[in-house]
Figure 1 (cartoon, rainbow, N blue to C red):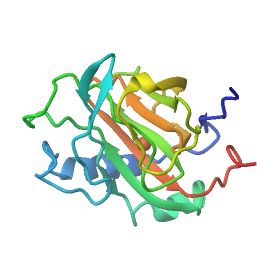
Figure 2 (figure 1 turned 135 degrees about the vertical axis):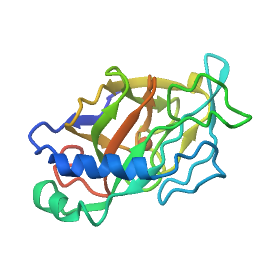
Figure 3 (figure 1 turned 60 degrees about the vertical axis):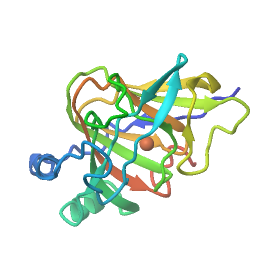
Length: 206
Ligand SMILES: [Fe+2]
C-alpha cells in the first residue's frame, strides 16, 4: 500500500509572536471549561461524548472544543502564513470527567476525520507532556481519505500508518481528511488551529 504524506513540519513558517500566544491562552482560560456536553456549547466543534473500542475495551474520547481567535489573528495570519484559511481558533483538550459515562482512562481524542476542513495547521502552545502524538490511521477496505466527520468506533479495524509528535510553537500541516487521533494526552493540550479547505503550500496537492 502506498502511504501518502499525512503531515509536514513547517519549520520555515514564522512563530506566533508572544502576544498572540497569550491571547490564545487567555481565550481558553476565559471560557468555562465544559465538563459534560450539556453544560456549554462552544462556538466551533460542538462537543459530544464519543466512545470507541481499543483492545476490546470501550473508552471515552477526550473532547477538543475550539474557540475562535478571529478577528485578532486575521491580519497576522494573512501576512505571515496564508490568506487561504477558513477558520482560526484555539482548541483545548478536555475530559468529560463529571459525566456518569466517563471511563476514567481518556488519554486520546476520537479516531476521526475533521468536520469543518480538509487541512489544518497546528501550533502547540501548551502541553502537559512532550510525548503527545498525532496518529494517522487507515481503515481496512476503505480509502485513506475519508468523508468529513467520519468517526471510527473500533481500533481493530484500523492500521496505524504514521504519527508525529508536534514540536511546541512550530507550525505542523496536517491532512485532516485522513483518520487521525491525538494520543497520550496526560493533562493539557492547547493548540492554535488554522483551518484550510485548500493546500496553499503544495505539500499534499502539488
Ligand atoms: Fe481532527
